[in-house]
Image (cartoon, rainbow, N blue to C red; front, side, top):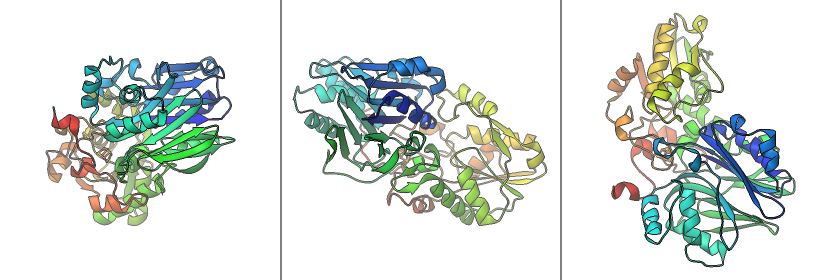
Amino acid sequence: MGVIGVYGVSSASTVIYYGLHNLQHRGQEGAGIATFDSTGQCRRFRGLGLMDKIFDPASISHLEGNIGIGAVRYANVSHGGLDNVQPLFFHHKSGDFAIAGDGNVVNSRQLADYLEDHGTIFQTATDSEILAHLIKKDGNEDRIVNIVNALNMMEGGFSFIIMTKNRLYACRDKYGIKPLCLGKLADGYVVSSESCAFDIIGATFIRDITPGEIVTIDDKGLRTRQYSRFSKHRMCSMEYIYFARPDSDIDGCNVHAYRKEAGRRLYRENPVEADIVVGVPESSLSAAMGFSEESGIPYEMGLIKHKYVGRTFIQPVQEMRELGVKMKLSPVKSIVSGKRIALVDDSIVRGTTSLKIVKLLREAGAKEVHVRIASPMMTHPCFYGVDTSTPEELLCSHRTLEEACQAIGADSLGFLSPESTNASCFGCAEPCMACFTGDYPTALYNEITK
Ligand code: SF4
């Protein structure tokens, strides 16, 4: 998921629309924008698919107002459909409000049970709806106290932007697993999952929202508070490895710079004799550049990505994923034919993509394909909003290195060590690497009580 919110900016919906375009890589199942107009009426438009398919000038201009939030949705298998596309909008006697969220609350089932036992009827499967009901459950009039109390009941990796008719609240989980940053735009402010959304709308990056922080934005300006005394900094390493755009800076670390350094270290740990380095477009290109620079092996454009086809990892159904790989990548025969290729990819999740790409390169005449992965073997599922599905589906959860190599049909296979993955990260001393190590930053309530 990717979220954005703007305050005090004319034509907020247009600004959000362009910002969401730069967050499209974070979710392609659906998108939505909500604003409050000058009369205090909330307007919202949502749809399924890519931004260009959902919005047109008429739908954007209908969303009047100088305050708004938006989201692109990244779905897992069970939580698809328009109902779960955010922002969600809520009526309440104390004032209407809307919420857009990223990530996953790991005790959501317990919280939903508690709320249902007290009369709540849910209309979506989102954590944002749980947050809304937690905020309003006590009837307290002090909204920030309600938000603090609600967030303290939630465990997991998340960011939320809450909008009332005259205020934004930007909240980041106390472990700092999900990214959220703050920028300035003209006389107003903008918050976003990634700083790359600021560039397209001309906003200036101010800073990252810190773990456990709530930033309140209204006509008095900015205010900040911590919702919990506990806070850690366990930023998701997969944001650097795979998810985020290379032009984003997260917690003080540029994503491209991270990946390039990871590529350099990858070669040092897993050297190979090859004629060319080929990166898997697009999230692996920075790592491939680093690998090429460190090894002295020339970088070549051996694979071309067809734009405007969804990322395979994001598409929720296996058959769609397999079809997606065929649709989205083409080998450049004249470049790869007869060559020993060092194929650099950012990660292996299920192995579907790697198997197909190795096959594509061989069919195009590659003599050898040596796969180098700029992250460790993924052995554990993610419970913080990345749909890596079950451990059984992960290629490396039940295979040795040799077996994994065989399964994807490569001549050799090498991974970056956890130490180097961590060391490449300049922005966070102790990032979450649970999908590689099993060391989860939080308790896993939903899993324990299954
Ligand atoms: S488990 Fe992996 S994907 Fe999930 S938050 Fe941690 S590093 Fe990111």
